Figure 1 (cartoon, rainbow, N blue to C red):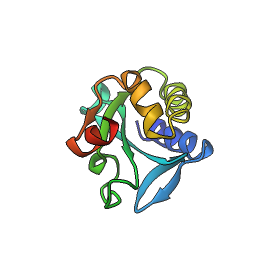
Figure 2: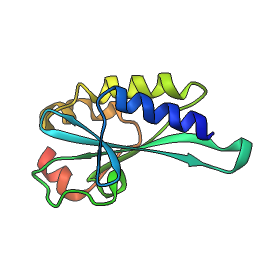
Figure 3: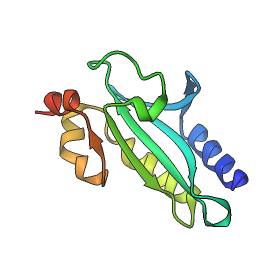
Length: 123
């Protein structure tokens, strides 16, 4: 699992993710996407998940704890091909760079939790 996680991190960095306060972050237009790979489960049954958070500077303060502190949070199971799933996710969120687009494409982030402050901004 450690090698797979390292490959996912390498893919994220190759696709433009930069370390910020100990977490990987992708800047897309006016939005910032935090992507934290984590293992869910134990041993051979463990699976790799990307914890994805979206933050806008319109909702200060900047997240200290990465994705989990963002006003939008979604877990993305990386399945049997974590590197391909990571690339597909970066393709998807790489097209969402403002709140208007986020509203229009929110359904593409299945299971996303959106806090009250962001819901108010999204209208």
